[in-house]
Length: 122
Image (cartoon, rainbow, N blue to C red; front, side):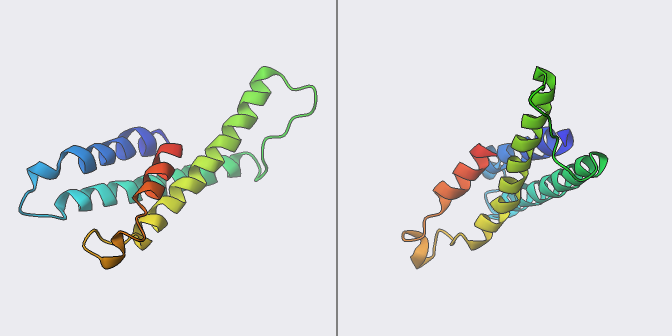
């Protein structure tokens, strides 16, 4: 999970944001690195979440009214982690249906805000 978030995800964002001037003649070179690193990050994250649920016996962490702060923190970590994984899986789907900047539908279906919002939320 740390490899997915800290190494692949953050470096993919930096490549997409700042490395475009390094490849001026190859328009998709930086995009390809970004895409490949983000796909690898999502795959590793999904595998990590599957491993976590497998270790937990395929149930959410449950606690009764007698929860300690540690129990509550464990439950909230599982809930927020599940939401982050769902958003991370939906992120490539939004990128696939997003029209290219040259398209006539780019002005009408400007989904950049949706992709940015999903990335910042996850």
